[in-house]
Length: 165
Image 1 (cartoon, rainbow, N blue to C red):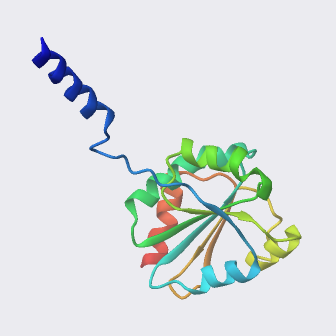
Image 2 (image 1 turned 180 degrees about the vertical axis):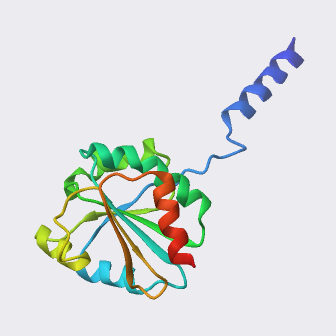
Image 3 (image 1 turned 90 degrees about the vertical axis):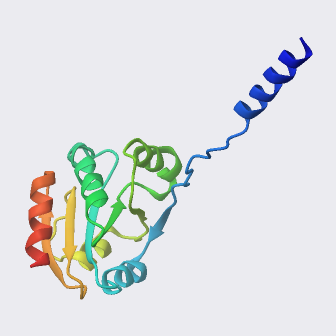
């Protein structure tokens, strides 16, 4: 009987100890301003930049997001970055839960520009600010593609392939 109790105690002990710890990366979402955005675009380190602007309240943004996550899994030669247009005080309540639900695998920021027009002008003066919006920059930081509205996995993939050539 004592052996059985000892054996069960050992089993319970092993089950309570996480001998295979899960990768528990905490999702961080920092604000981005004009200086950080400019640095992000210019510091390419040999990779294309795929910059997607989105918001949790934007239905087409939420619909296209899984395609971006899938592409980011496949394309290690491209830096994927998301920029949420939600309010910075919604990071914990809305943005991070959304990113977790999509098994996010790339860096995301929240808009830290004091005026929306500054963000718009920093990316494309002709952009009307509609979401979702995707900007793709080449390895030298030159804007090559601007996509407005929800896009599919195939549409995104095609645009990346064109730039890679």
